[in-house]
Image (cartoon, rainbow over all chains, first blue to last red; front, side, top):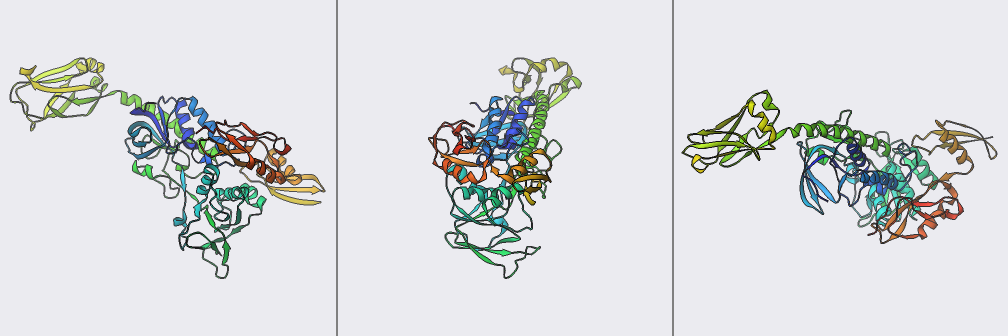
Length: 428
Length: 121
């Protein structure tokens, strides 16, 4: 596999949003589509969501997460999309340049006509819900536990308390029960369930796991390992209600306390974020405030169904392809101006070939070294001469101007770049 | 006459179903927004069914575990037995998504199948 310097569309992330975006970008006419994934395989978090309930809208089937991902992965592979696995995006610029660090390819710089941000979201952690006390082993986010139990084959504990009634927390309560653990309690600070009611039915009610609304963790007991938690009831302002404390012995506390769109990279590219969603401000095509940078799925706002993420990703991908094709056409008209022999720089740096048809264009430059004799100022393409004129001398302190005339348009049209060389006539 | 209430789990909408029973017979179901709710409610009132998802051990796999699920729903009271069967299985990679891992698990007529491709290590 060869990684190109330039792609039509680069998608960051291969979860449901990224896969759908890549597929629709390709179908939308983008020739070169690159998906960059930091994990060693495609699919994102779906791979650890082994429970069913995915795809009811997209496939009219009740599928587990990996199977839902598999169908998109299979389609993406047949379309000829390039995948770069085990690769971190270190930086993205508003000029749509990406700096990558890849296990197989090392350091890479890639330019994109359009970018789709599909980094998904991350879980809120203990620090973000401010649980006081020691920091013993045994406090994990529900998603971390899910990864261990479902993919890597480790049990994080035996007796669990889950804080938060988010979907992942409830699903993990059932999953851990299936694997022989005991889930003592699910605590929810709000007066209502924060996940879907069907998950309450299938995951908690079916397995007699009790849910306590308006309750939270007051403190964690245990120094090296969690030994218990102290739960407490709260009022409608989330103040502790004295006398409602209860010590619940357990060895593990799972946190299912919300998700935040993952936008560290977006910020680097100058993408403006909505403080309410935590994701980029987008238009109806999921384009961010930075032209050519789109955002797909949970990176924009946290969805409750993967089917909606795929739909949003698809729209972002289609729009990115449309933008990329227009941008490609526009940028194909431009040729670079190359500072050749004894030329330090040229302004402008690039030239729209069509612009010559409308009028003359001045090339302004400075030389590197003075030449105190007759010189040629020579503008040429790879194979053809465009214009050559003489000067009696050139000096770095004095700007040199060469005018490209409209009548030269036909010759310029043949070139892929223009080079300016300045040299003594005696050397010609 | 007996009244039962359920939250439908056929889709994420979560309709609240009211079911009027006479003995073991469902007389009337209300609260559903589609036909799936009708089917779910009837089943739930008489003999609840669930899909089951878990993992099996893989030898020589890209990961140590392969996620699997029951292709259809099975009686809820049999989940424990099905899980026991699943726990006892060990497969060898490579495996393809939807490969049958346990055919007709404990005589339910439902296959346990692979949830994804599992390439060899």
